[in-house]
Amino acid sequence: MVLAERENLLAAGHRACPGCGAAIALRQILRALGRDTIVVSATGCVETFTSPYGMSAWEVPWIHSLFENSASVASGVHAALEFLREKSSVVVISGDGGTFDIGMGAMSGMFERKQNITYICYDNEAYMNTGVQGSSATPYGSSTTTTPAGKASFGKIQPKKDMPAIALAHDVDYVATASIAYPQDLMKKVAKTKEIYGPKYIQVHTPCTIGWGFDSSKTVEVGKLAVETGLVPIYEVEKGKPMVVKKVKNKKPVEEYLRFQTRFRHLLKEEQKDIANQIQAICDKNIERFGI
Ligand SMILES: Cc1ncc(C[n+]2csc(CCOP(=O)(O)OP(=O)(O)O)c2C)c(N)n1
Ligand SMILES: [Mg+2]
Image 1: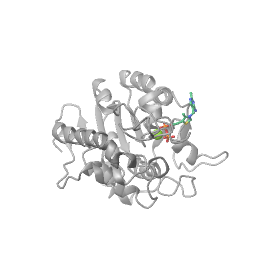
Image 2 (image 1 turned 90 degrees about the vertical axis):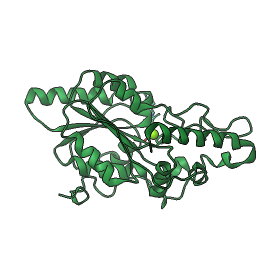
Image 3 (image 1 turned 180 degrees about the vertical axis):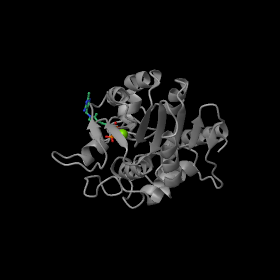
């Protein structure tokens, strides 16, 4: 069956912003997973827009944990299923703040226990639900409410944390990056996790119209530019197999990506050119390192 023709398991009427990249990701992820899935969600935009009090957009069993402990809750769900000899997929869906920052210890423990759980991080590159505070997934030079661009600052001064590399360091069975701009690739990767027993990590790049500052009709375009410039490499590493990287034929200069978003627009000023050049250097390094 064609993945895109599968049942939509995210009910209409949820409260995501128009053009929300995370909502697009969620629909694709649930399509690929199918009904026999139990989702654990950390606190964040996805949890908030799918579950206003008394309502739920989830067509699969779903449990909301705290911001920091979704991986631990998933471990408990997995243990209970083993006891009951049930075989449903257990999947964590958490934001970048819940994954890169506050929930990283819990996720590390989950990886170490080698349980059959898929951890999916939807990466909108900041704490969006609480007002665009910077996270360790926020890219270098980006303006957020805690790393504001202005006379004294060019935005975030640290580089984005390489979370897939940290997952790989745990020797997990499958690590992949994906983007909502390439839905077939994302759905294939999510579907593949059902065939692999053990801990898995997928990181999905999900543009955020409000936090990044672009028109709500341009979510997919922005997502594509992130990949086409080399800033967001798309790849998968299955244990025992060579890394598979999404190649980009016509690479674009990162300026095209920066220009699109108010979080980066300050970097186009002459006095910030140096920072924009450093971001181009990050892209060039990715292109070389991954063979994009
Ligand atoms: C221990 C704790 N600290 C802070 C919060 C407040 N809080 C709720 S959601 C959130 C941001 C979540 O960011 P992320 O995981 O990136 O998801 P997003 O909102 O971007 O989708 C924060 C700081 C909380 N719920 N619990
Ligand atoms: Mg976030």
